[in-house]
Amino acid sequence: MMTLGDFFPGKDVLARAKTGTGKTVAFLLPSIEVILKSPPIDRDKKRPPILVLVICPTRELASQAAAEANTLLKYHPSIGVQVVMGGTRLALEQKRMQANPCQVLVATPGRLRDHMENTAGFATRLMGVKVLVLDEADHLLDMGFRKDIEKIVAAVPKQRQTLLFSATVPEEVRQICHIALKRDHEFINTVQEGTEETHSQVEQRLLVAPLDKQFPLLYVLLKEHIADDVNYKVLVFCTTAMVTRMVADLLGELKLNVREIHSRKPQSYRTRVSDEFRKSKGLILVTSDVSARGVDYPDVTLVIQVGLPADREQYIHRLGRTGRKGKEGQGILLLAPWEEFFSSTIKDLPITKAAVPSLDPETKKKVERSLCHVEMKNKEAAYQAWLGYYNSNKSVGRDKYRLVELASEFSRSMGLENPPAIPKLVLGKMGLRNIPGLRSK
Image (cartoon, rainbow, N blue to C red):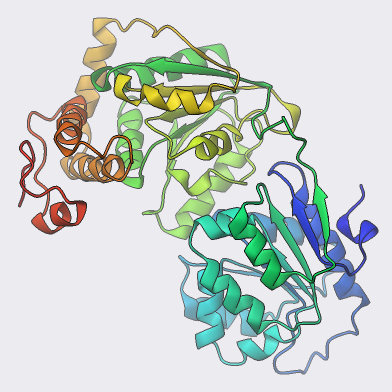
């Protein structure tokens, strides 16, 4: 396997690369070589320099990159790897870094800045950086990390090698290249035009059904898939963290083997579930977008997206969890009739509108009974989050009166007679004060 180090020893590189293409190894190997060629670090030195700094947009991606680095360094026990990211206690990380100084540091941007500002001697250690890697740069910027990246770039030496990876290269990414890369940097494009992200191996179906049928329908789709494939491994994407929690509760009540990952879960839990799902078969993971990009779950057999994706890119990235590395997979997008306008943004993809499977009365009853067992506070939180998500969608949120009607429909689909009350302050923030059909508290 050729790595970046073979092609451009020491040069800055902008690489346009998708996830699932082995790019982590491509940047780790040359980075490790740089460390091996560096003079050995004086063991007694109080603050040994960090030689390789890798920045990832999410905790999941950071954990994964650190795990790959450890695998590659199996036979180099003298080289240490650490990962710092939000969701863990800062003091704990400070202790860990002091006890086991590392030459490779993988970090999420916000937490790295915390250390730069609050950890004694950390800034000095960054002065040793020889290789800076910005992974998924487009996603780093989408998530609002631009200021952090500028601060980080300013904190590492000018004499370094920078490797920047991005699935797309929009204007924002070009601006970051301008700050982070030398002018004579190399550009590598591993994305063939026309293979626009989505794998042709993935059979995609669009199902359109009103909200009151969606939960029973989701149950039927999952049951059918499980019956077809004993090694099933399904990802169900929901619009928000709280809707994710509610759907996971419901599927659990329906006795499906289900796990959940979303931003309201502590990091240790998310890492554990992520690892379990990576290694297991016969499992359904319900998730919000925390794990949409880059996280490598092998052998996912089906991706179901419930509700409106934020945009075409998000639809594609979520779908990209299946059919990875040349394997086949299926994708289902489940929309309500008023969300069907979204299909025009993906009409060039191999997606077909499919007939909605029939729901027998027994299934509907079973789902209704299970919904009764889902905690009330979780349904209330899901309703509020649902309202917030669609309120901020340009197409759906425009007509506030209609939005509130649809939210009531969603509330009924969870088995609630009346929509839950929402704090006045929240309604004010959403611009929904005094809209009929909403209850405030």
